[in-house]
Image 1 (spheres, one colour):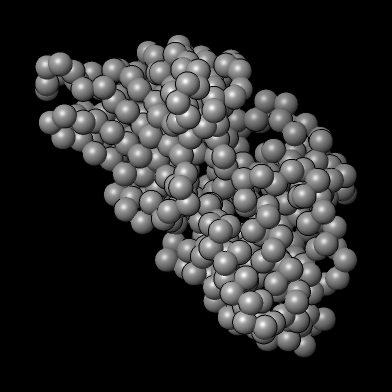
Image 2 (cartoon, helix red, strand yellow):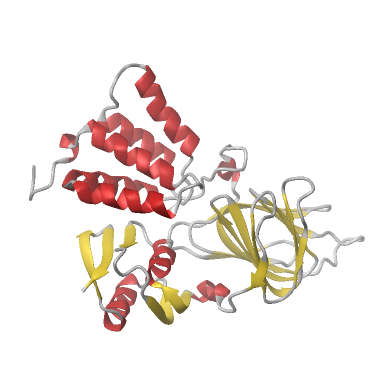
Length: 329
């Protein structure tokens, strides 16, 4: 035991298993706000709870999509064998699950590891511009994995995880023209020319049309199809639920390394910033609903945190370099 903290091997196996269970639940795609609050209460109950959660987050932030079925299977196998999972075996399993090899592994709609075939990937905090053979350009945001296929018959991008801004060029190479298609876990998007943003979220796809038009078709047959024009956004699941709304005009600012907040809840800003860093930036419930506006550089968290502390009655508590908490001043 060092400095009031347990050494890694001294953490009780039951605590490690509980932390894994919370992580699986919160990354399952079906977690509720109540689940997140319950997990935060669990972390506050005992120091070793927070320490176990911190250790797992150091692994989990290396990718954005946790495969819950495989995680549950690891724990279930240990239970069925009649043994309590040992700390090292559980952490080893979690490390394999959440990407010791880095970003780019993602779960497709059928639970398979489709992201393993991704032709293009970005790490946490990395952005990349990809020029395609047809003249189109993909601007990839942090922690994104996708596969791009351009051939004589097809212009298709499969988005496995993350977010991409598509600058679709008009097809002048073939007749008839090839439509440009983006596939996600919840359906597909199609256009001939234009600019739009696609983000793969847990259980849903978000698309925003910036220029031209984009047509969105959910995966389940008979679901409503939507054609979006400039300034429109649609968040849809496989059934197509959700109304078309006005898009955020600054949604693509991340291409230039910026995050624009307009009267944004502090908890939402913290969640967005967390996408660009390894570790955990969390927001205490007492300050979660505070509103903030500004333009923040996603590559310089130190500057952002300093700006937040100057603007709002909050302070930043550092448990470890990986774990920062915004709390009342």
